[in-house]
Image (cartoon, rainbow, N blue to C red):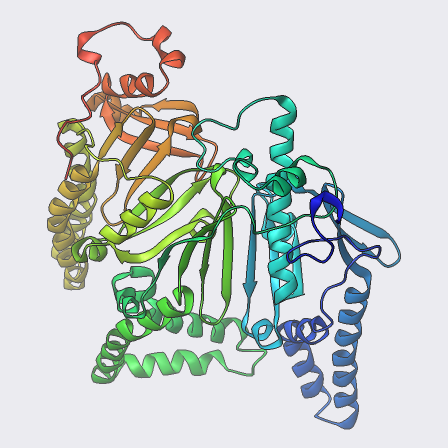
Length: 552
């Protein structure tokens, strides 16, 4: 029997080697290719200045060979190894640099495979420690084989849970109350060999043998048709055109593109309205097609599953990405709908996780999909969405109507004045401003209907927005503080904003424009021990019942 009760050579076992490990030698191909964009302009300059002579090609070739040598040196001098309770990333050439990541600090592991990496059978493994830095600051192994990446991912996640479980057991305390899957679950009800491995301090560990994998959702291919209903994907053609124009202006000189040619082309197109209209129509027609393509690129074969106490989301057509979120650190979720999505009955969701940066991307639970399916999947993986939102006072409706209408009325009034006094061209601005002011009426009313908040005894929920309606559902234990703010205009209207400080997600979730008595009562209802001593008993300040009719 091997250490920790595992037979030698058992599947999934991890035995630290005597020598540190290196990345796959295939990075000697990927690193120089990745350097090409930064070398392209200097190489082009060398060739142009040298008149494409043999000498200029020689210098350019020397630069390419230098990039390969640099990649080889980086590969030879970088190693990684699990040593005891930590992962060490070492780089040594003239001086020695060691980055140490405690295994118990690991909160998630992200494995992605860009196109070239997928072609060569390697991947990028990024480690999330909740440090709040970017991905490379937290830990990155760019160029492990796919098999090594998956095995190392399983080992790191197993280590993180096992170390935390042993620490909890040593203190003689239970895991955090309300955790979906705490570290103690690693050994509870598991085979005796598994319990021995979790309790021991040996270096060999078995992975994947404690909890059966559960698949919550696999996206059907036909749902790619929902791409055009997401504004971010729908505007891609215009973003591509704007990017091309910006590239021409920024790098035109280096690429020998005269800016006057670009400006002249734009002026010529402006002088031919039929062609301008035709180009605009083509962009409009391309919007749904490109939206479907972009939706497929980012969300192809989207899968959400649970394994070993982690939620694992995988997606991507060109770059395949797999993100692991530790379930016991999940504090809730956020459900978001755009205008087109709401009309079509769609929505999307991502997790609210402690210490997770870029939660909208790395914490994604569901892409744009039917609302009922999204809520069912999220409810199964994390918990149901809160219903029975409490309405906000009429003053909140007046404030939303004012902000949606008044700015456009001011612009329209100024434009009309300018059109009557100076030039009729100002009507071009006045008419759209008047139309936007009229559209502000339904927009303001919809913003008010979207407002709401509630507390069901264990989770609080707040909702706001119209063009981007967002409802956050957060566990009570995630709240670390409250902020009650009131601007001069809010004081005159008799409302205030209550923000629940949360050590996860965006850091705070606000109930906008609640009543002056309703706001403190809501905070006191969630955390009575914190605010009750500061509140004066008043019947009018009693919180509304959870069964109050929902706004919208």
